[in-house]
Length: 176
Image (cartoon, rainbow, N blue to C red; front, side, top):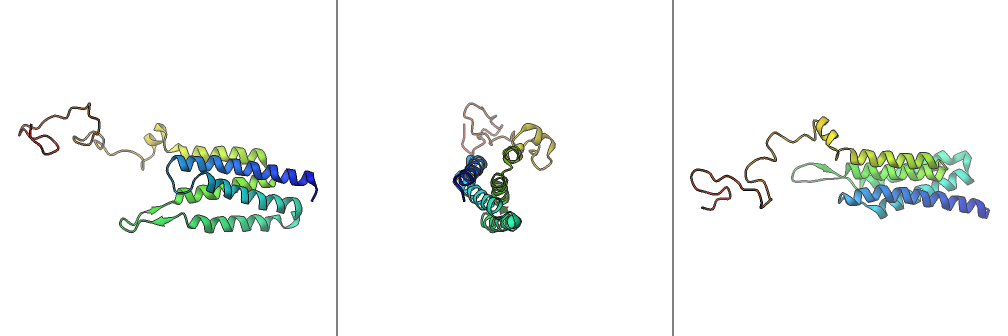
């Protein structure tokens, strides 16, 4: 493999790593279990293996890509867990994000630079969409129940004065 080919491959790996890092940064910022380094390493590996497959073994590159996707799927399964007490599943979005970061690495490794960058922007848009007021207004799953934030005794703001009931007891149980 010549020096130009190796530099091309390195550039693809670096772009994949950068895009994975950006996706991981969003997950880290949100306090999720997998973050920048995990996503960057996933994308670096995906870009490296894909780039090598595309540049050196073009006739069987699809098998290399399928292997990357399968491996990342198993890794993503480790990010998903069920909380025993409530039976709720956690980690699905982080697992899907790791799969998407690997896909961006595959695109970068295959030389589809613009598609990889635009795909990363789309992933970030999807991850952040539910934080927008417009989304919350239209999504039935994200609406707050009527009065949930306005109930007496639910505020932590010391500047808010809560009304004292007629029996003279404060909402917290003490007397006035």
